[in-house]
Image (cartoon, rainbow, N blue to C red; front, top):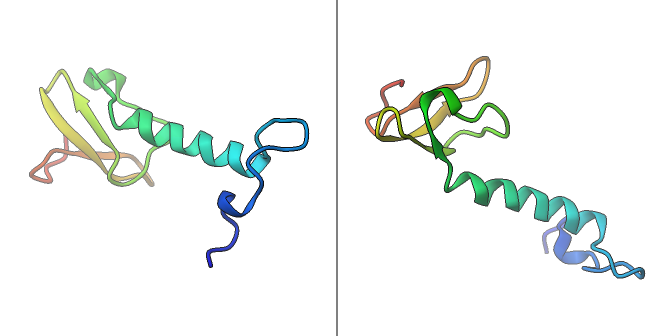
Amino acid sequence: MIKDTPFQALVLTESGKFGTEWTNWLTSAQLILSATEQSGTTALRPTKNLWIGRHYFDTTLGLEIWVKQVTPSVVWVNGAGVSV
């Protein structure tokens, strides 16, 4: 059994609202799902909520790119692994 997951917590509190665990989990899921369809110019690349492997379609370059490194600075690469 996996511990500390929202699946072990009640979905709704007695007042009919999502519990804290579920609220946190749904917020994280929303960030991840919205990132799967992000696109824009090079200047508008995301700078927050980045993780290795995060996808972005750069309309300036006309390429799909991914985050390769987040610290100490963000490195974006194309499908060939070349920094862009």
